[in-house]
Length: 474
Image (cartoon, rainbow, N blue to C red; front, side):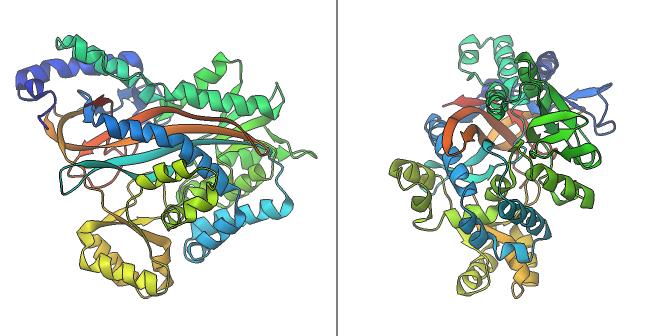
């Protein structure tokens, strides 16, 4: 493939002239984050890191990712309703992973008590890379599916306008017209609004559960503002606020600071450090309530890597989508090799292949948020340490996806303008709403492209590694 935008990348003077135009366009669009120094203040902000120009994405693979998103929505929802599958799949993991064990304790508690929640909202993001095979062809391969706090739906709604402007400034109006429209924040808000409506209390609010440090607040605000435009009141609270000032009434309605909560939308709660004992008690209080949790705890458990690995086994997808053979085929086509590290012959074989060729694999713990995966010689070090203990069952092994690097220019606050070898990761946002047993809404609502230098094995935008991007279909 010839280098996209070679005329720009090979012209250092043009790069230097174009970067300020792009940065000002990003600021005009509100593609901003708070600073590391002042993460809870908007007095000073930086532009969120992004690419100077859009990155090439194979059209067929982009369309494949679009076509399978509603299938994944349906699959996630059905998995969340199957306690025996979650119990069996996660039984080894909860013995060695304290975080998953705590989630599971709450899951069992609310199931034994009987669910008060009748409306269910899923906001997922399925992430992929473009695997370059030996024969030179590329294939769409899923990295993971995020079922909690799937981020950058807000900021990625604003990036198309930036790249359109930059291309026009470079005298490329026809290319600018090829930038895809994209507004995940609108679709996410539509799903939240539907869940709020079905909850059935016009005075109730949507509560964003937020982190203690809130650098990425503007990503939330785009979704928030879409809800305000529908005259839906939004409040922002931390887990500690719910613990201190939240309560359930006799009908299991959740109240926080006197507001009845219709929807609790999690933008935190996916990492062990998000919880202390009070936060766990707040989570249990919410799970016991009628409020629509996004996600409820069952759906969060569906997002674990162990579930991802189990789904790749023969005939498992068929069990959950028996009425949809085409969906099963579309989903399976995106899977790469996934291997169990459970104690036993199968897990022993996984350890063996990983120790022999660590560069061919990724070792994945049950964590979200980026920056958690293990690569190369570090795989060997970890497995040598845990290979004979049950601790190994807290991981899964995955074939390493090997995309073809492309040239790009990554813009960061106070960073140098330089072209480097990069790889991209495509995310597809999906939203569904179920009331009782009826699927009321199931949609693909937009995409997210993130690009990073090839020197980084892992990490997303929030982790400071990847940058926001747009696909340029080729």
